[in-house]
Length: 227
Image 1: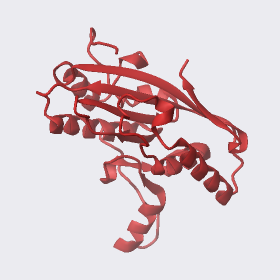
Image 2: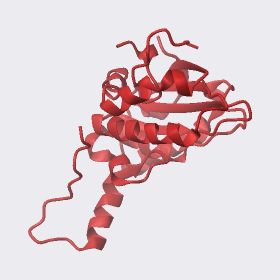
Image 3: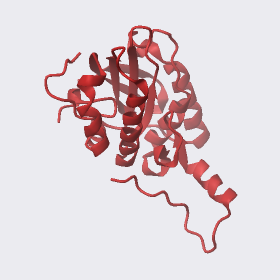
Image 4: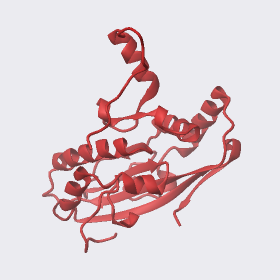
């Protein structure tokens, strides 16, 4: 399945569109005696990260499943925010507070005493337009199921989406550890259901792919088109 045939979570889309398992149960540390509710909450707060607008347990990112570079970037991406009201159409690298994100990453790397090695990450930007007939809540319901599937598949570091502007245009974006994991994250039943609804819900959509490169010791970084 080609990456340009996918939704933000990389769900397969129907041919001819314009181009432009149950989630794993969460376990806590093994202990000899049952933990109190407050202790369990503390452990979950330590290991699980809210990486999207969805905050239920099946939508949380388990940092223990990631390598050090990916876990640190995921934590820095918790500070991701849009800088522009025209995010639906603005250049991707100028849309978000990437300088602040990298500053936070640098702080985390120094705080943990980690030797950062150059790493690249896969970014999907889904630009869309919905007609007035689309019920936005229907999109949200499909999206939420797809997000839980993507989290369960692994390597899904960040999900951000905005709200449609007056013309129905919007942007959703995902940051993945790798392109391969992004493709793997888009094969579930929820993604297939979202794909089947694409033609009726969107009047236009387009996929952009980017690479975030963070070089040794976080000395420099860039976002480039994916090749």
